[in-house]
Length: 144
Image (cartoon, rainbow, N blue to C red):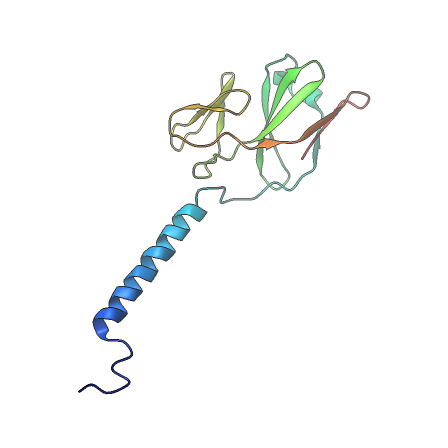
């Protein structure tokens, strides 16, 4: 006959439950780590596209960092029209580089078109699009 306290949980059950809890915590951490791990963008950020030579023509792309270091891509999409994307890879948070007329993640090789759409390499979601408003009178682009 076993004592009442011993019947609560035996060593084997305790170890099995502890191991399962550890695995659950690990898996939760893996899914939480699939996004950016550095600074986040809270906006707004105001920039002058005229200050970036690469934005002079439609299709041009420039990297613009926020004061706290968050990387953003600005794309000249049309006459007085711009788009902006977070350059934090949605796969594991690496900083995505501008590559020709699109983007390339150096961490896992994900490729994105100039409109932020995933096009190949490591499968992931599209780059996060950021709201933009261009004021033609001041020549300023507000992001976020």
